[in-house]
Image 1 (cartoon, rainbow, N blue to C red):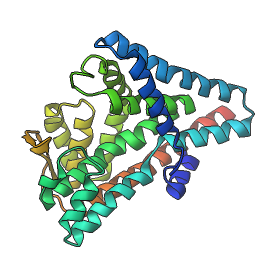
Image 2 (image 1 turned 45 degrees about the horizontal axis):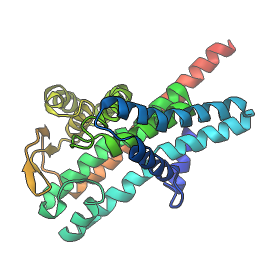
Image 3 (image 1 turned 90 degrees about the horizontal axis):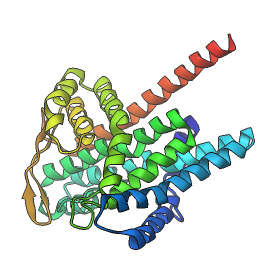
Amino acid sequence: MLAAVLLDSALGEPRRAHPLVMFGKLAGTIEMRLHADRRLAGLGAWCLAVLPLVALTWWVLSMATWWLWWTCSVVALYLAIGHRSLGEHAQPVADALAAGDLDVARASVGRMVSRDTALLDASQVAAAATESVLENGSDAVFGALFWFALLGAPGAVLYRLANTLDAMWGYRTPRYERFGWAAARIDDVLNFVPARLTALSYAVLGHTACALRCWRRQAPQWDSPNAGPVMAAGAGALRVKLGGAAPYHGVWEARPELGEGAMPDAGSITRALRLVRHAVVLWLVLVILLAWIVGGGAHA
């Protein structure tokens, strides 16, 4: 895990031939051939897209020598996490806001979120970026670390592919309401524990009492069962106000408020990135300590 995180920190996401891009094309082909307005069709498409690749990962590792097993495991986890990518997307938003260039900030945050960024003021741009950092800390980093710790490289591959299909199919639109149901629900299940561990990590590393209070009071109001705890606890940990109405497709949609304290600004984005970074360090330290304890007990 430490090697994969360091590799991500050094290299970032592959610029060319990223396996997830190829997986997305495969999933698109499967959707084109199997799409039907039925939940069972969506479940079958999900299984066809994900399970063979997870099984292939397990088979390769089971046949590998120790050094090849270690190398493949590191590479699989490296490809499943996107910690450095969070900063590469969010920091330009903070820099533009700090420089007073709202147009550049809007364009930069538009690469992170799906809302209509042209309608956002500076505080709303900062809120959108901060929310994205907090939520994607769970989705792009901690979920993969959790399932790798639990099931090794096959677990990380399972999580990342399931999360990708949720991003492709997990929408409440006429096309995906039924077909994408399985992708959305499976992603919810896989994220249930890591999302709450992420929220707890944010609380421990930030304003703990505020984070726990916001988590308890505000998370149940959020539509997503996993994004709610993560963003509420994260907003509370940072003592910043997030959530609230946001524009989608030209319409302002009401959303519950998250957190408490100051209105978000460029500093909120930077502090959110720092919070995720510190949480990654915390997770690695805890895993290393656990491995040392278990290893010491086995040796004894």
